[in-house]
Length: 141
Image 1 (cartoon, rainbow, N blue to C red):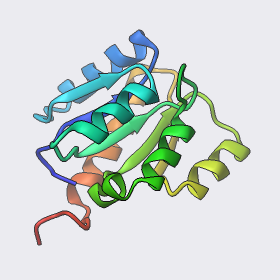
Image 2: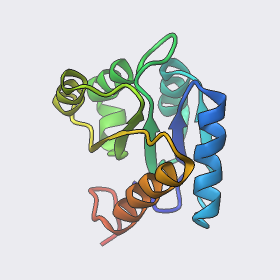
Image 3: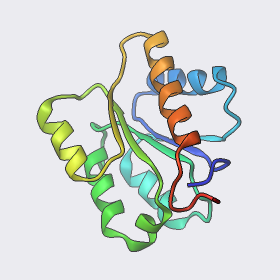
């Protein structure tokens, strides 16, 4: 994890992309935010970038490759696992089975997207503040 690296948002809903971007901007976070509309495009980016992303915020239900499938691909790749990018689900799809499947896939958080902008803002603030203060395998000590 790099505190200066980009925040990756994998979200197929353009309205939600906009709200996530606005919340991050309102927080004054200087990290670049990169959006992908599906897991397949995000996976291609992760496999080919030299950047060390700060955080992944991922929806579950998306076309081409959903969030759980993306997480499984990351877990199967030694190169991507070693990047140790915090992976957090931020999704409207939430039930006990999905939460269990997500944690079985070793995600670091699961949030049911708030239906209000203020709620979403506070969720994103909480996630970013946690990861900015958390020690991590790729963090300088």
